[in-house]
Image (cartoon, rainbow, N blue to C red; front, side):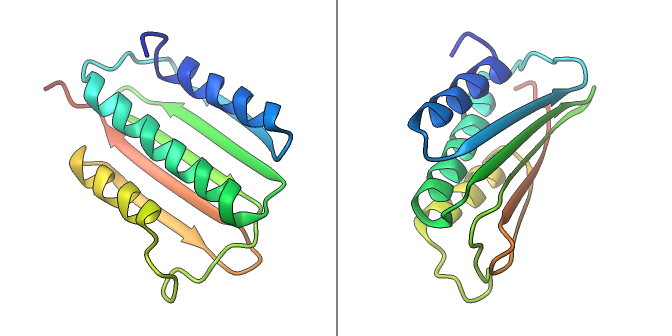
Length: 132
């Protein structure tokens, strides 16, 4: 994991593309900030992985777009697929979503998941860098 966050995410995107199951794109903006808190970095990555795996399992999506946006004081992540989506209120909180939510709480990240039937699913995360 010493590659840094965006390189690790890039590898994961390439891996997804090699499966031939989905077309994934990664956009990185802002000036790269190296995490002082490596644990948080790993947790963020796991959250993305969780979303990717849900997308592959359930979404029947053709496209997956990931954006990493570095700011001085925070990292913004946005992931969206163009899959079948689901009704968040009536969806059984699959362990995947609960995992993402719990992990967000762990690192004080602001977590937003949006989805609608036939409209795909979007995950937005704002992570204020922590030094501890």
